[in-house]
Image 1 (cartoon, helix red, strand yellow):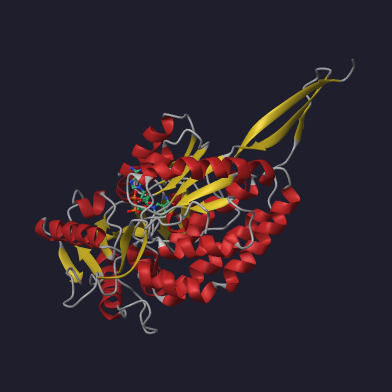
Image 2 (tube, rainbow, N blue to C red; image 1 turned 90 degrees about the horizontal axis):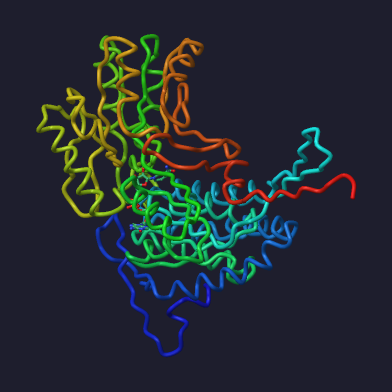
Amino acid sequence: MPASEPDRVPGHRAARFPVVDPATGKTFDEAPDQQPDELDSVVDRARRAWHGWRADPAARTTALRVAADAVEAAGEELARLLTREQGKPLTESYAEIARTAARLRHFADLAPRTRRITDGRPVDSEIRWRSLGPVAAIVPWNFPLQLAAAKFAPALAAGNTVILKPSPFTPLATRLLGSVLATVLPEDVLTVVTGREPLGARLASHPGIRHVTFTGSVPTGRTVAEAAASSLARVTLELGGNDAAVLLDDVEVDRIADRLFWAAFRNCGQVCMAVKRVYAPARLHAQVVEALAERARTVVVGPGLDPDTRLGPVNNAPQLARVEQITRRALADGARAAAGGHRPAGRGNFFAPTILTDVPPDSPVVTEEQFGPVLPVLPYRSLDEAVDAANGTGFGLGGSVWGTDLDRAEAVADRLECGTAWINHHAELSLAQPFAGVKDSGVGVAGGAWGLYGNLRPFVVHRPQEV
Ligand code: NAD
């Protein structure tokens, strides 16, 4: 780990904070509670490391490929720790680690294009690309490693250095990832800092940071944008979503039910672009509710380390309280739970997979982001009504349309106000595509070449053709 680690300071017993296993609700380890005043030296070292790292693109490509191999080699240890602190089934942790390595490889091989401008003047103008400096990457607890890699892989590939701050709910797998990468990357090129607030707030406002790239909730995103304004650092925000799935009247319910269920419930519903609302034609509504409820009643819920588990616990107690509160409110508003609707007896942050019907459209479970294993299914009478409802929240991350006539489904998808729209599936992303939310769901563009350029600035040289 970086020399900034408080445990490495001789004679200094660093403050630590507890890390809870969500499957038991009990503390199983602790992590360093780094203090904001440590950031000055962390950022200073990242700035010094930047000068060497930015100078050699070929060395960066090699280092990032080796880094991907190192992540895979540590896959088992990383996966077990990730499941322990995050809660997801072990197979999903392995998949997350594979996606972490894939991001490193993808960006290792991307380079910005130098371009000439010819506009008739006797001048050769060339657009080159320069890195920015130390980048702050602040990430949430739902996919701690994959979302971190989605930030540090393009930032590093572009020639920046990175200070990565995981959520205090999931600091340990990220620390381990930091140690693994420290064995293959030059010193201080990637530094992991862990701690409770105001560590993130101070990192976002630190004058030595040139780009703050944040993934998390809308309210924290606003705070981060305000904090970064103090140093006029660039800001990229990947924020919450409330994605709608619109089912068309030619949909084959039995054929899509599994896909639709998992698009909502994967990672226990804790996915920014999970399906969070389903709109079904009134004629098919009862059939859709029953198909989803049947799956919710029978899916195996349990600790992520148990090989039979398909759905783990909610990651943390505050999020569980939110899921419970938003569900209770829907039930009080007149909704009915076709499956679940409550916490099961026993230990851990579990919540029964829940399908809600008869939900008033203005209930918070429809208008806000539940971010948990609860899904409202709403009937509609006209397609315009469904599209208006799908577009009717402050969010705009993703959306999907499900039906047999693909041309018609695509025409409806084209009307969704969001960054990515899918037909007959949801939340599948290509590493090469831009990823951007509209409205409250984000600022800036991540993913593919856009993610690389988001970590670069243009530098233009004008050279006359004659002296
Ligand atoms: P959060 O906003 O509470 O926290 C995100 C990160 O910010 C954490 O590391 C947290 O410690 C840190 N933080 C908290 N207060 C801060 C402050 N004042 N200044 C700087 N940093 C601060 O979000 P969460 O609960 O960890 O994650 C869930 C949210 O993330 C959901 O809304 C989800 O939709 C969103 N999310 C979005 C995407 C996306 O790509 N759009 C991906 C995953 C999750």
